[in-house]
Image (cartoon, rainbow, N blue to C red; front, side, top):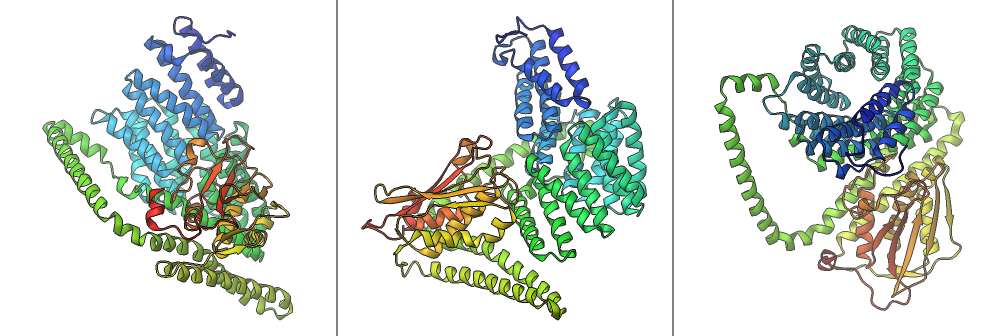
Length: 640
């Protein structure tokens, strides 16, 4: 091994090619060794100094495989980073086909993370760059991505046409693995459309291909799909056998995403047969793995299944907890899609019709391009006009900013207590039916009362904020120890469920402010610290001495922290930064920012983004001796 970084003059092309081939061969037997080999090769050269296009092509292939390997073991952030490097190298080479295939690979990784918007973006980029001269294999890959995307979003009828067309194209190429992958997704789609026999037929064809090619990834996936079809046919023995084989095959090659799928399907089978305790045991294991690889789609699904199983076991407290986690995760996915306007991005790409039209009338492409350019110009003109309009109405927007912010807060905060009231009422009805269990029934009544009080407090805060423009709230001297303890107590259920340790200081400085709002801030930050802390979470709540008339309070967790590049937009509305477990840093932190801003303080976060070093969220409030206090105006808040 050489110790210096090499240029293309020092690297042997045969050496790179052989090493890449060796790593590829190890992906089904020793994936960690495969990653080690490619990483070692990557460290031996300086990509920016390579001028030989042949060497550059081989190096790009190294990065592409490295991205695939990290994706296989569920290390998706690293996978995307490596694939992006490969994409940049292929762009230098002007290798159109390699660029499109790499976009497709990046789209697949985003799909594993349930980042549907990004997955769709990279697929559509592939279609756009391929134009009308797309070859069969490229077209099959991109259509497969579209079909897989719609299956993930449970839109199976929309997925099937794309997959059937992809299978036809893949069969005409020499890429048998691609043909097998498409057939596996077709099997899944048919089964989910209540046609399990068609699912078995497609699945068996896929399995035959993978047994010949030795594709262990494909084999694990299709065994799960065959198990799904058998489960729908109530052939539980065969389904159990397939799920067991799939999990073993996926575990052997560290294919953690498919391991989770095997466990989720196996748990659904046990639940279907009334074996709820066994189902819960499997799901808890799957949830740990899903959190490790940050697969928000599986995290949401598992919480929903756990809620159903615990409800059937009459463990209503845990059922309620997982039900809330399910809805928080679902909101995260929906908000991310709404923010990126995925509905406007989705298209039905008529590949066959477009190709025939291009072959018959090439001139139509010229006309279409002119129309697109005209539309772009119109859109740019509309954008400029809209910017002028926005400048004219900015003062009016400031007048309704508070109402808009608090309406989001109310929608966010009232949803959970009202859902709790509904579920608790149902649970109370069940308990009262058995008069012998009166103690449990009285406990449920107390929970309903507490939940109702919480909803009432939120409504009262709405009335308070609505009156701010005419009557400012009165700042009072606060004993922050009492305020912080109240905020922590509000999170008692989550603290007990996650076995979190919350360490409070014996004393806290007095400050000036509005106690109900600050309790809301503390509860939000404690909730985030628990959800994104370690296992188990350990949270410290402290304060710094008063400085420049303000006191700084902080909440420290023991999680993996937040990369510095993401911290600037953390407190923006609907910010989603990938800390995906049971919810996201979106609305809750934007509410925190708005409240503290109203009270004259500021908020922030400190984190290295390194695993295990955690994050420190802080906020400031006017100190006890600060003479000038009062709510910040709209203009003041807008200037910051």
